[in-house]
Image 1 (cartoon, rainbow, N blue to C red):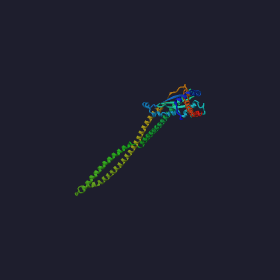
Image 2: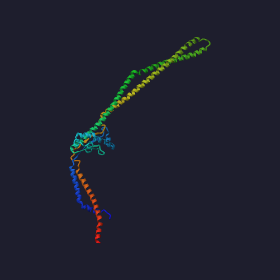
Image 3: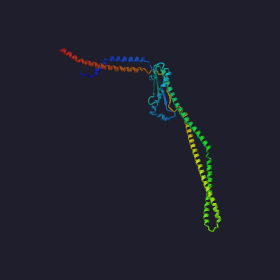
Image 4: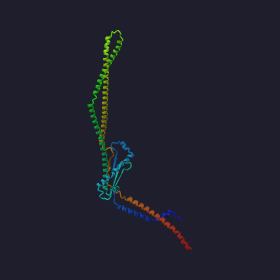
Length: 382
């Protein structure tokens, strides 16, 4: 004979056992209530810190906070839950003396919870202790130390930035002094003001030499032509003049050659002076360009240094305690109503499960006993 489930029969079976179910639930609730009342009460205090954007940031950008920025604020959870800060709090309130066998990690798991609620800029520090007042003081101490730690970190970053900018500024100031010294030495050792006058004097002298050369060459040309013309004169009437030309022509040619040599020497000297002047002017321009660049860098770094000093402490996020917390009046654990409700639910579920198993067991036994009863009756009839 196959076994089938009959809901009405099961409900009747459970209904007949309601007293045991009630007793089970009452016992479970009573035990849970007693144990909950005997457990030590623990109180959770909460301190809240507001994370504000840097003071120098745009207010409109501060209002339009992106999810990525909010996610980055979870860095401050590490500030509040750092091991060194937590250990200093344990030592401050002498909590390790109450349980010297407990490690710092165990204390932290048992005592501290730090979180930033989703899509907020509020850092919450929860401290759970047996003493409600001490729990509030512990949470407030961690909040104060977190704010101070953030301030110190921002100040350290600002001081490092100020020091680095100051070093760069001093380096460029030193470079300015070096360039000024180079300019002074260049002006003393290689004055370029006299070279243009020297070049101009040589150019004037070259002009005079060139005029003399042109005049001499013109004279030589004229005398050469006259010499050819007088040489072809067969009358001999210009013999005296011809003799004079023959005597003066070599002298003029020698003078012209000397003038050419002098002009070439003047040209070389002018070229040398012009090259020297160009080199000096190039060196001066290079020093002036370097000096101008260094001066601009000094001005920019000086302005940056003043701005950095003025904005010191306001570059990173600012933390401020908006809720130091209160002394909790109700314990966070044990949660007696919740524990009793859980015990009641478990009592009902476990009793129902037990009654279900018992129902199937009794039914199976009843089904197996029916064939034996029929066989017994048949034997009596025979």
